[in-house]
Length: 416
Image (cartoon, rainbow, N blue to C red):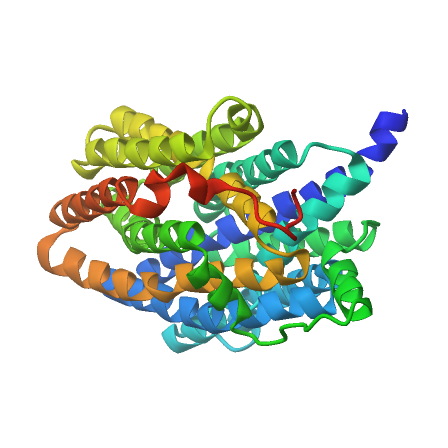
């Protein structure tokens, strides 16, 4: 009983993590489908997704600053509440005013503003939750990303069947309710705030505090390892994100198989969840440097079979292995930030990384949408797979990853 009570903070954080991720994953598949259903234009779908990523690009550094200065839990609750409002606005507009292409675009852009704050805040809450529950930090990092991955298994499947069963517009009611549950879960979470505690200690010692919004970018740039990994993942994201949001939806829309789209994306998420859950075990048996190399090689090897758009069973299998190899990356990145960055600056570092990941994919989505219309899904997907593979192999031989000394834990970090 005492063990269960001690783990209550973990249950509450992960309930919020799961429901928020589930809501977002439903929206991810529903918005492109709604646009394609109304316009039959992959280019416009790419434009909507690209423009909706721009607010998050600008909001991510501010979200990180808010997490560091206003508190991790408060920011997460507020972000989920605002996400719920923005999602429910879709069916409300459809009922009272009617949905036009411009309205869909505006609502998608507004809704994207709030996602970075919730995601960033929950990642910074991992250290506080681990301390409150007595759970091993690496294990909790893996559980957190694994549960987030499970939400992305269920989300596309749920979203696809909602589209088939009640229509795309009604799926937004479900997503909005999930965001409300995510906010309510954290209302009951009672843990410390390592970021606020670190700020108070610095103030008591008379140390200078860095208030700048760009502090996270400065830290990332000065840390060779974090910089190299962030740049590599940024380039991979340019290639990878349009696959889920443009390539596969356009392919399965032509086949009129929304359920197959959900199965493929769900298989990818299933592999990712398993890889993430395994991170706690892997981290005790494999060095971080070896793990990074394994992730990059496995990712490159898995996406190539998908690019030829084979029969559904092979496509699903390849998607699963792509997710499996990629799964340990996010908990690994959380661990690296926890080990190398002061707690009162971790929000801004996570925010800076998230901002970087939002920066380039919009251009990729627009170009991919245009390429699909001009040259078709097959040619476009092959080009994307080649680009991802080249980037992954180049990162393996980067100096920051080759040198073991670059993986040392930094003084003043959460984990020492």
